[in-house]
Amino acid sequence: MKNASDQELKEKLTPEQYRVTCQNGTEPPFHNAYWDNHAEGIYVDVISGEPLFSSTDKFDSGTGWPSFIRPINEQSVAEKRDLSHGMIRTEVRGAGSDSHLGHLFDDGPEPTGLRYCINSAALRFIPKEKLAEEGYGEYEKFFE
Image (tube, rainbow, N blue to C red; front, side, top):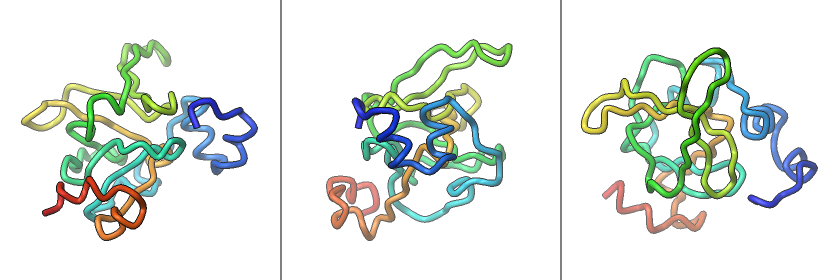
């Protein structure tokens, strides 16, 4: 839905998902769907369905948002310099949807040292048991 109209996105997404993904919003820490999700599976872009992150790369950052050490595929996310709120940060966007996902920081654990701090509202979680059923069977290899 990269070329979806604003109206189509408003109809597809919840108000919170729209605010986060289309208006560069941030959801509250510790009050979002996936910050404390420990199930195995993958996280896909709520707009495009593009696979973004695996639970195998998720860690508890203590920040209250889902945090990952790397994306499933480097081409699935785009990085953009963000100068808002008086800070210099790296924004993470969905490559396929151009939606706001969150931010990238260099304070994560090894082996990457990175922390992809992502809004739950930008994601849809697909449990490993449903990967094939939902068309993501190629990602079952992460959980064998």
